[in-house]
Length: 174
Image (cartoon, rainbow, N blue to C red; front, side, top):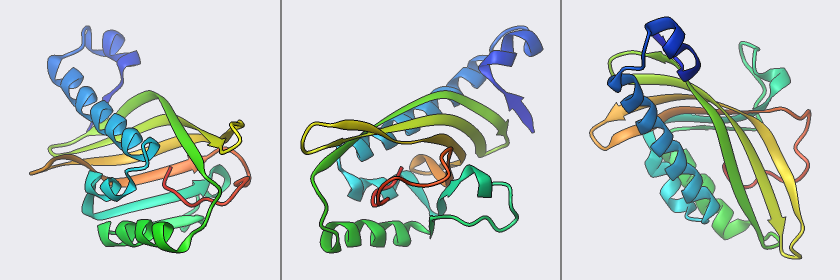
């Protein structure tokens, strides 16, 4: 496995290869599309960014290193993601609000023939109907991205949040 990070490319390899830059660009574009889908409430498109056999988890930092970590959300497979969105749309009545995701520090930690492992930081800001905005969640994404016939897709997305609790109901994906 190759460890690829912008911070180390110059010092470890002498210069950044065009292949390394291309991989980082593809992963960054996937992440930006992911965020756009969430922030514009096009949640029905969200599962399309994942593989059929995907895994999606949201868990606190304190649980992340356990063999069987306690997650507050755990979905396996695209069909489970679709079910979550359908239940959110039909069964949940919430005060109107919006989310804005900010990400930084996208780091490719390993690469093999069709799979890229990454880490990045995220901050989610929630704005309520009255216009008040607040930090909803801060944490790190730990992802496995797979190259498919449809392009790069998340095979695993693990959102590990920094706080010891979630301040309000977690209804939408992070």
